[in-house]
Image 1 (cartoon, one colour):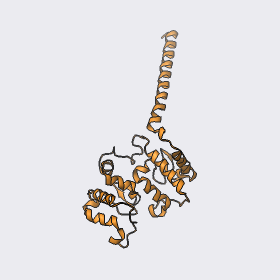
Image 2 (cartoon, one colour; image 1 turned 90 degrees about the vertical axis):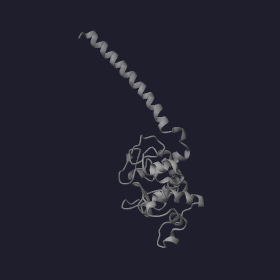
Image 3 (tube, rainbow, N blue to C red; image 1 turned 60 degrees about the horizontal axis):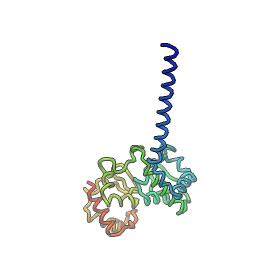
Image 4 (cartoon, helix red, strand yellow; image 1 turned 60 degrees about the vertical axis):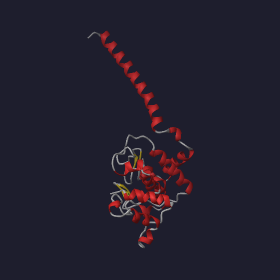
Length: 227
């Protein structure tokens, strides 16, 4: 191979590589903005990120691949627990954690609202189903599908039920697992528990849910379908 041919191959290869690099760089910036829905970065979301760092949440939790591995990943925590579930854990960690103890922080209502907003925004980032345990309705089978089609399932998340109860390997362990509760209790029995847990079981630690009669019926219908 002549020196002239070698130079020609070098410069063509360099220019092609440069063009590919620039093209991929532009596409990456375009994709990142779309996948992270940056247009929804409100002041409250930004404030929530500051709260996340102020209380050193990354020391124990991972989020978007960064942080400690002591406590659960929080990238899609809003999908798993909903806003009320996150509030319940932060306000009273001892009642909603097991052997992995979370400290009690003096988080204000304003800070807590901002933190929930931040985690809600984070949960909508398209991470291509990573971490693998955190998926939404795209996952087939189990509670994830129900969350996509059932009003009762959406209420189960939004009202913070995941903070204490587990469905298909997702949720807390303070209360009974409800994956197959429909095979054990009728819809009427479930509705009665939701109406007043302590009336059914005086030793119940479950608080009376702040739900309307319609919401109670939707939750009971959803849980009765879990068999």
